[in-house]
Image (cartoon, rainbow, N blue to C red):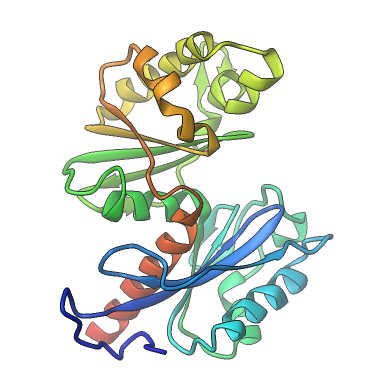
Length: 267
């Protein structure tokens, strides 16, 4: 198995592999990533998120996933949380005990080495989509929005991430953006795609007024049916569907870990 830092020449490119783990409320999944193409190398491995999803229980599962692949290089891990300097500052869909937990130190202890990078799950998806997916070869300000139970966000400028944005909580006409336009709102109110797109447009227009982005990338499960609602949007900025879907978190985590490792080697 080719590990990070051990490139092998192929007919197409120099192999550069990374490893990512995506922690979600219902499942924790990980895999080896080709950092040139953004594709998984082989299958991902998934284990149900333990309940309760305490830091120790989740960390043990992450370590199991890393051990499953016999991976020894840098590891990126996403959390559904605001993460600053490796410390979880919030907790969405995981146990509240994560708040103020030094996640980087905890994962380093259970995995067994210090080359760990921890980041917000939407940020990981944004990094992946910007490099390999809907934002590939796009310059300027790119905003990824994941439409699900809430709205996650990631903002990048020429590939550089502004971490931990929480645009789903921004007020839009008296409601939080995610209370107006998350895909869960469409389901709960039984809205048509056209009706829901009207609400999404209001949210995007508010973001446009603040950021003047060059591109929106729409993620989340509803992006699989983008042809049913993106054409109904009336905002100014182009909107494209995310392309990496359920691998984006793994890919973004692996890329973030590799970038951090490169930065460390440069120093």
